[in-house]
Length: 82
Image (cartoon, rainbow, N blue to C red; front, side):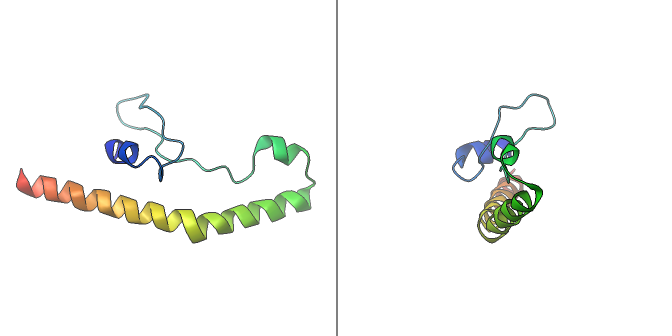
């Protein structure tokens, strides 16, 4: 999955080089940065978080799901040829 995410790093933002043998971060998305959060009251934070979450669900998540499905299909094809 890491190799796929590295190939499509325009989709998998926040990709980091593997630090261990079993896990690696392939995607990160800030809903609210610490710097902005400091200047907002609780209600403003709530509004920003909800808007950011909605944006993630309506845009980023579907793109990620599609790409992961494509990676799985490619992996399955390679496995069936082996």
